[in-house]
Image (cartoon, rainbow, N blue to C red; front, side, top):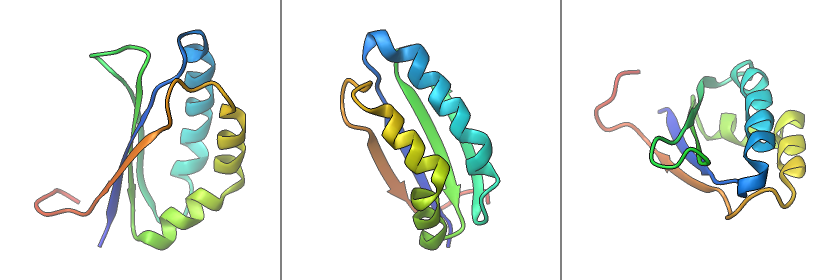
Length: 99
């Protein structure tokens, strides 16, 4: 069964452009991973400094591989102290969804 992740990233006001750049650099390599079914980046309409990721993986092993990938670990390291708060990540499995 697939697993969806919904992540909210809130950068510090002075780091919005840098964090946006880092996130855009993450999308291509993440989409190319085996087991990645979708990887979309959004910007909040309620708060333009907030970014949202919608990620869809084939299974937990694909999520684990993503989190261990060189591009993801480099992204996490590059975030350093650019965030206003820790990322919020919610995981869900489909109940009634189009796959």
